[in-house]
Image: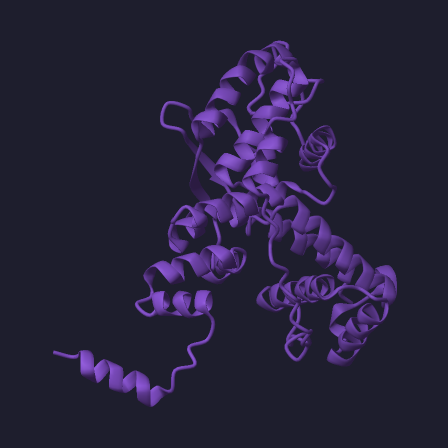
Length: 324
């Protein structure tokens, strides 16, 4: 008899080391698979005995508990990934997940900060002490590079080329990409280096960002830093490190950057993941349309003066008379 618990642990190790999945992804998949095994006998759960009907019932139960579409979709991905690995490893002869479908999660439009709100947030760490200097560097690097919070927490010294303003980021799937640091981010890092060095206390630390004990920041630590800065700036809750990533992408597109270039800087595998930002700025898109479309000037004239009530035949005659 196969043990789902045992093989799930092997699969998660494969996911982390061979596929380069993030720590957050691995822990989420571990919770999903543990929940599946608990429902079907715990340690005695045999994945070969679970049928498509069992798994569909599990998905229906998750939806019945009020779990969001995105969470249910992740549960299905966890289970599907395990069975595909079991099948590829020869541990099962059939994949019962192939017939399972879940509603596609609604894709919420990303929230981006206005330039005014962004400046308020970046100005929140006002002191020159260890914490404020580090927090200022964290915020500036997040906004300047557009990197994910896990990428920032895992950033190492050798990845940064301060002279060129370039940082090598190890993203999802352990895929490396280049990000860029503007002058404000580089200045914040220059102020951070001496304080960071003093906190190492003779220990060799490769991570760029450390806490007051001299140990590397975690994803959660970065989120707490942002929460503290939001309170200081008197801004509403609900802003996350990912909001700065959204703001980075939105501001680039507003300034005329190409979608493909922004995709590259964000590290998106699919262009469709980047295209969501084109829906964030309808007023900007309208401005672009009116400036570029050959018939937009007529549209603006009509909008300013109201609808043109002149009969179409009269307008045609007027054009005919004025023609050379």
